[in-house]
Image (cartoon, rainbow, N blue to C red; front, top):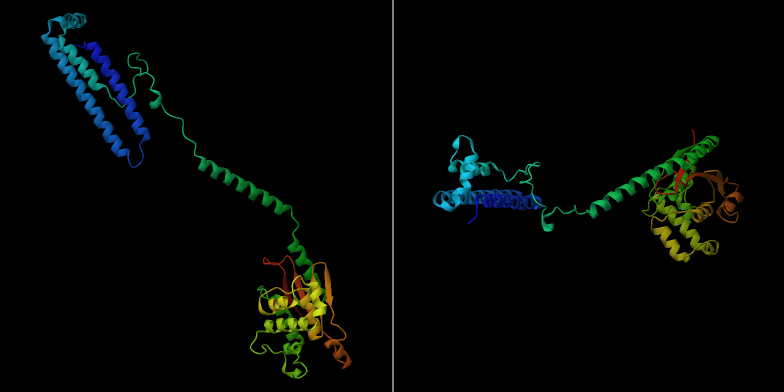
Length: 340
């Protein structure tokens, strides 16, 4: 038969063990399971308290009925003031156990209530590293560093766009020119040439071999055979290149007929070769203002320009502005008209 001290010590150990289990359950609970875990822990506390009270009540009855265990209780009664009875002693123990809250930690200054070290499986484990969160933090730091480096590099870079625009504006003023914006859609060179030909009174159909039959007094034809102006100019350039293949094929990295179809039928950008073909097809001189210099593309004297000069006609001159840095999509041509 257990003595009162043995039962009391066992009760304290059971309380500590239950407290450890409750702590571990609550630590591992999730948001969804927290309520169920709290209810389960409360039920465990209630069951332990009820069982311990029953054991104390059973022990109290045995102490009253067994003579062999009365001596120990009587010694405790002798030490109590005012002659407290054995029942008062056991009632005090039960009351002390009732006041014990399993959810509270033992008093730090009480050697008898200090909990023993938890078993290894119940000890708090080190917090698991969140590697994904660490990777995201590193990536964010790298992006911030790259952005700062790019900003610093941009601050130290030469502003080519500003330099280009400053030079071109100076040349516009020197040549009494005003700029007409052309849409940056891949057709800008051909649209700019079409605008210049219109301003100079040169029919677009002239380059298609219809110029000799066309009436100059009718002005520039906006469409030939249902084509927009820039399509007509593309057609003029490619027809001339096909008719003078030896002048253009050596400068290409692909077959001439493939290149011609691409320039004629798509929004492929035009360049130096197309300007040369157009200067000869229309018999005009093309001036291209660009950053740092002005390029002049003259027609072949043996072509349409030569025939005009033989007839005493003045050679027409058209002006284009070429941008390398001024537009986000890349190289671009604008039309330049004479200022009023």
